[in-house]
Length: 221
Length: 244
View 1 (spheres, chains in turn green, cyan):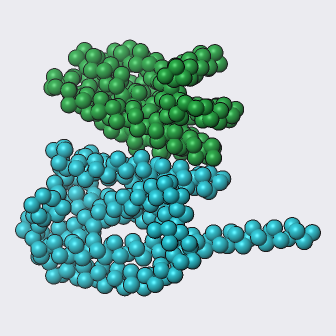
View 2: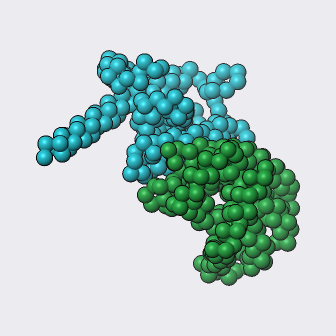
View 3: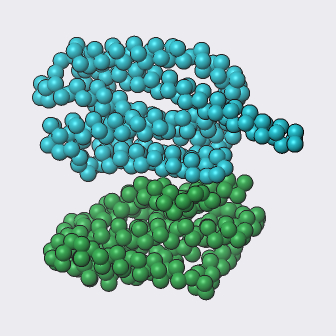
């Protein structure tokens, strides 16, 4: 367990010292959301209707943009091989790296979401549910994304390939995330969608690091 | 199973099976089409457009069966490092993608007269579309590396991850109230479809399976031949280097 926190601390320190990664992710999120009123027209009723979907789709793309940094830097400078060779199970290290990734990208998205929801004129009833779905959903995005990031290590055109692999797997998160917010806005119970989202997280939490570890091992063979 | 890890032995068996698979595919598809287009009655409600079902439903089954087979072959390739399982998984992917595509297209053609729309964002349709994207991702990943073996392993892991979509497709019509009709063949209490329509449906499904077996053998044979050519070329280059 101490190894887990060591890796989290290491990744956070790296992200804070060298990177503007998390700032760029949030900037991308904000800019893309702001594009929608220009594209759709500033009509408030329309923006209110699409706000949940726009926020979720852009959050999903923003979190995907930062994925190629998850293992790529460590893969290139060789530290990934050392991490694999430590006696700690690789799945634990992967979970730590995913946790650090979520802290540097998912959490800033979560913080920016309510501000953008105001800009998109989201109904006040949707705010709490939006925050809950993003809090449950963004870790799932990081967990599933880690599988893709590990699979494309060393591939040609890894970034484009990553989106082809990961976006289909992101669809359930999007469906239930948006479904919960829309239900809350319309005043119907959103528990069912939230529970399914939580179930996906509960399944991804142990399984995704395990698959990612298998993918990393074969990438380093 | 490990008996067939030897390509020569596999090829001997595959070559023996191939004519039977081809004959079965031709016979079953001919019989199935005759029943489907001529000998079966039109639906009391949908009239003749119900005949789209005899292509649509078997290709949907094929899309899922091919993915299940691909995931199984991939698991065998990862667990036992079985070289031919890996090859068969990659040979199945384009076939499955093609059948999924046929299913989506015939579904759209059927949906227009019956539902009044080419496409609906219904759970069954959406999960089938995701299956199609999973096939595309699998094929792209398998060919994305300079070292082919690396791509094959990565694709095998992806195939196993994508298998979570299969139960979602199967049960999507039960879990969500959707436009797509619920299961009428593989369900508790037996099929709720008249034998006059079930017979051509099953004939077509069996014909598609035989066709898949035939294509699988042809593709596997081509891959093994390509590997042989590659080895011979490398040997020639090596020999030329030694001679200098």
